[in-house]
Image (tube, rainbow, N blue to C red):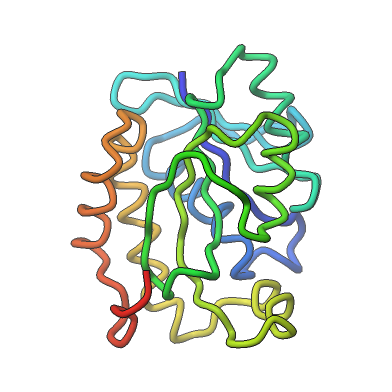
Amino acid sequence: MKLIVGLGNPGEKHARNRHNVGFLAVDAIADAHGFGPWRKKFSGQLAEGVIAGEKVLLLKPETFMNDSGRAVAEAAKFFKLAPEDIIVIHDELDLAPGRVRMKTGGGHAGHNGLRSIIAHIGGNFHRLRIGIGHPGSKEAVTRHVLSDFSKQEREWLAPLLEAVARHADLLVKGRFSDFTSKVMMDAPPPPGNERKG
């Protein structure tokens, strides 16, 4: 069994924020793979389904980003999942917009959702990092992540989310390099974003 967690903030106000790309990704996976309805559980919204013959749980914590670890820990404890069975999808400032990278373990790099999860279950989980780019100054970060994707960004975002959902079987099987290659092939990042990440 695998637990795929999308990070974001609950509520319509945040629904299209850059910080909510994790929510958008798990929604896309749920739609593409015919998951059951979302229901309230583990301080969040949970959907269940099967991908590549394996039971998969999708979780959107509703605790707000800074307390995401509480929802993840509740689900992990209930289903007796190790950190290695958990994949967290989140926005990444240090990747150029539209790029994706997988990472296992490591620190939180200032991401409050990751910081909370590490505090609750340790750092040895997998991360699918979706690049949103850095606004250029530390002071502008909060506004950047809590602003909606621009019309121009949505042009690469939609195909990217579709590709993540389409190749979720590789994610579930742990074939992470194949997964990122296929996603980037199906949804190449916009021009000018090659240099970072």
